[in-house]
Image 1 (cartoon, rainbow, N blue to C red):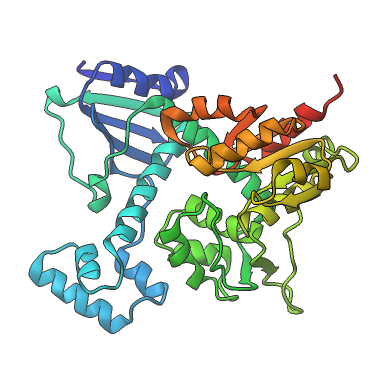
Image 2 (tube, rainbow, N blue to C red; image 1 turned 180 degrees about the horizontal axis):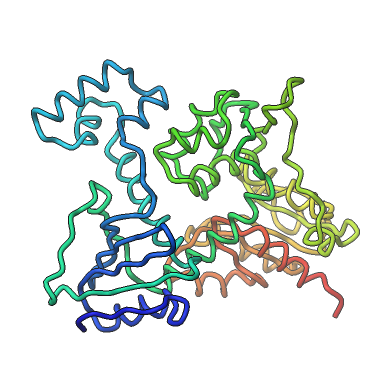
Length: 387
């Protein structure tokens, strides 16, 4: 292919990725926008970030500021690094400070965040140089070894999902100077949208003193992951946020402002039955629907669907069940036989079998986790709108 260059706005990053993928080429893609630059290695097996536009802090500094190591330990590891030439991450794993899975997960999220953010860039220029032209570039540390799937559709869907989710998150966490405060330990949280290694790393940073901005600075994980974790904790009702300027104590900001989005969906308290066995997901979902103006009824899957509907007459059923598990499909079968009102099933993404399971469930809509709340509210509103 040789060299290809131009304005990214004219071709679109998705079209560019698709063209490079279709031709099975290998080379380097340089994208620049004002003072931001990123260099990607493109190959049939996937995409690597050779040099990112986000300058991540050294691992040692992150661990030191997060309180996971002392200055003495850092000095010892840096001395070992100089004599052994081992990456600091290898030394950290060898000393048992962090598991390798935690470091690998953090690196993969940093890489993914930079690639997904490209889909929102405007006014950028690009230049692709084929490997056959002899182009080479120095690798930018351990994260340059992370290879992400180059499937254009997957990248586009994930970028769109993140954009939607960040809009929801920023409706709650509107200012990075706000200070998160844990109201209880989040030991029972099972929100599938939360990354467990990230949760375990971020929770100790929520000390009631650090602001969101400070947590972002000391966390091993990228901004999106940190904000998503804080948002998930807030939705599980174990986190409050206070303004540093307020000396009288925490101010709860879990309630969303009633803007046009919320008012347009209010249905005068129409009853919605939420079915879930999760001790955290169900109350969080119920709170969100109540905020949108619905009367929410709650039940677990242990109660027969016919009895649940007799006990809780509803206009819509929202069922959180695993369609990839026999018990989830069995519950949907019993629910379908009970002649329920229109049903929305929330489930884990299950790969190629999801479509078949969704059709068998008898649901009007099937949404996958992590749940896009705006999409759920849209689907409920669609069901309840006058015919």
